[in-house]
Length: 299
Image 1 (cartoon, rainbow, N blue to C red):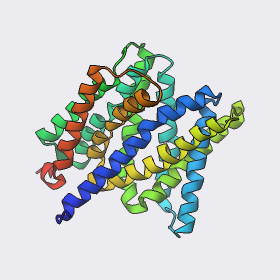
Image 2 (image 1 turned 60 degrees about the vertical axis):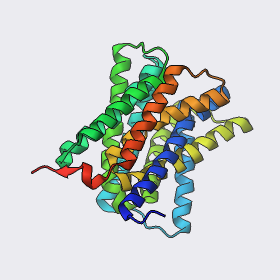
Image 3 (image 1 turned 90 degrees about the vertical axis):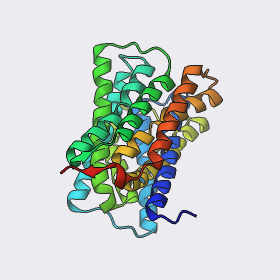
Image 4 (image 1 turned 60 degrees about the horizontal axis):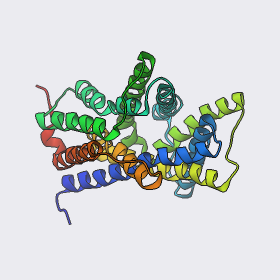
């Protein structure tokens, strides 16, 4: 058992982020299964957020958890209705103008953006070790994604937009989550995003699942890739900080590559294996780093 409370908190935070990365990394697999069964994007995302939000709201009611109020509630609604919706829109729109590899790589610019913005806003000095870990994680993400990186200017701008919106989302969440709690924060975010996508579905018409396989895929997205992933990320971020949590989340494309190889029969190249190894090394470095020692306020 780890006696040092700081080290124990970082270990728990690391476990939470790994669980979150596994959930988010599995989402493309579930999504492909849902697409194959005729579920369109707005309907899938509406069901994802609605089912997840209702499930988490039921847990909150059962456990008598208090709902966020005032300014925190407003921030969480904006995080869900604008942040999460905006990020997902930019990401999937970018796929229409760029390859999946380039889009995914651009999204994973967000750990670097979060680290830099976090340092600027909190007036923290970044250690060389942490900067090298972030750079290594980004490089490893590029290798892990693999494939062609072709794309037009709109695709590149949308991909960078997705990373930028997600970075702001994480930084706002870092301030709100410790006050409101991981479960209440995630619940409000999910319900706000569900409302927005529900309006989109009402406007264009639904394409809901019609087969058990499709419902299972959507259920996997809602439960594992949303409820578990979101709560675990917020819990991990509360213990590690936004910068380290974002960098460790670069495990997500590694999880996606592995699951795609196992369940979809997609090939895994040597470059992807090397990229995954680099990401794991960066995560281990950050997991061993002490928050107090690495982040010192500027004089």
